[in-house]
Amino acid sequence: MLKRQLIHRLNILIVLCLTLISCSTPKKSLEATNQITAKYDVVMRKNLKNIQPDERIQFIFKCKNKVSPIERKNLSDTGVTINSEIGTILTAEGTKEQIAKLAALDFVIRLEGPTPVKLREDNSQHK
Image (cartoon, rainbow, N blue to C red; front, side):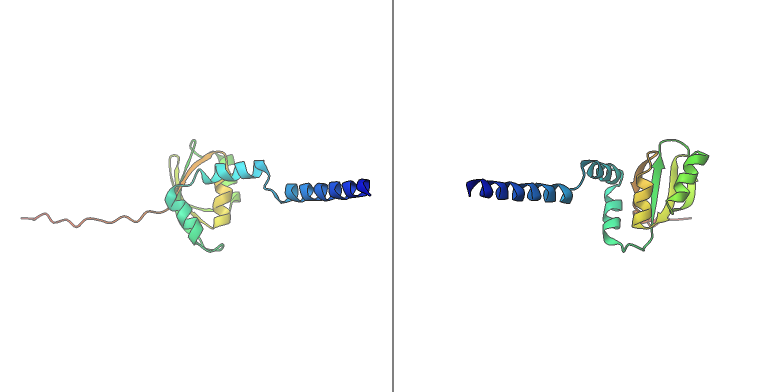
């Protein structure tokens, strides 16, 4: 009887351990997610949190070096629309999913959300 109870408890413990292991987030996946989101500035994080999955937002991003033809193909494969490029800085627009794919590229080092700019009125007197 004692042996039977011990085996039963052991089986429950094994099932519990397997369940916990299968439900936990893999360490590599979590590290990869953290590396991607570390590339976002505060505005980008806020914008991505507040948009619908199919909604597109405008943003800028920085690459390690000027974009090579192979890297340009990788950028295109993300689905993000590139609007302009000056050196290593590019402007673009895309959905949450597309932006996450872009951020996962190793040559993309920073993504920043749009920041509204207020122009000052010119109060100088023209004579």
